[in-house]
Length: 414
Image 1: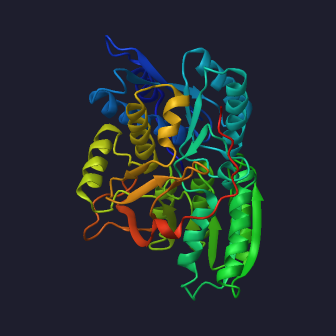
Image 2: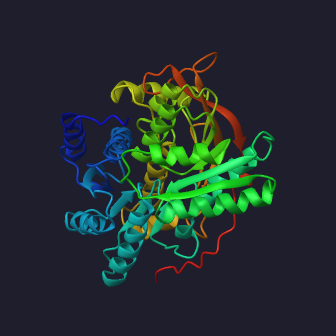
């Protein structure tokens, strides 16, 4: 089961984010994500990531003589609530919006920001996407005002299926995904890429379920068992992956899992309870046990300040460090000015690898890692959720092999 953060802890994080350093004006970043309901643990942990980054950046002087301030909005995972929140944030002085959970929300924010900027020249806002991975956002729905730091669903599936194609034990695959744009993108790319890379694999189930509405996945797991599948592909995140894994454990479902977000709140605990050693794989842009000193020092410091919870989002670090560099290089905190510095920006990440933000579509590119959940041994340093198990790199997919083409025809503002 997912573990929720206590309200006092969240309130303290929000209060800390709202503190103004004496003598400094503030550059407000509006964080718009779920802070209540089933997906609250995901949104709450995101607050901790952004606050940690802001504390580090402000300690070094901030941006152009100003300090960042995080203002948080609970969108309840609703596109409509997100638009209301975005307008409230703008009215409160924020010109930088960030969000990551739910591609339906992201689509609404892209549309809102485009219209706002068209109607309000000189008062433009920018939307920084750290986790919403519908491929269309950097293809046919691309926008000058939207930048994405997470690999989109097709990039992740390309990496996963390239890893899977070499496993000749995979014969029957079951697809289970959330019934909205992201889940649809995962099922589409899974079907297409499996057919291209391993036409001998049989897809024995292709299931969609409501987003954040299912409390008991037992009926879905029964279907998976009946199908004879030996492997599952799922893009489920938040409570939907934790509860799915729990139901699989309860039913004794012993299959391999190829996932996008098994490392989220409650996922590691469910995996350990199921005893699925070396059977849960996830595709990520980084993890705690990648053994560079900078990465492991960062992980250790963050865990001390977050009740032992890990650094889930390397992309938040990438986003905030690149944003700071763009603003300082532009000598401006105006989105219309510093956006040009983000386009095409090159950046060396904490693992020592080169990355970049593609100018044509504002999609970030980086090495990707296939990680497997396994007992902590050897050079592994960190476990997850006090399970004694952690993520270990099974394969590295180099940035050059993730650089998929784009159909984006981006219109630059005048």
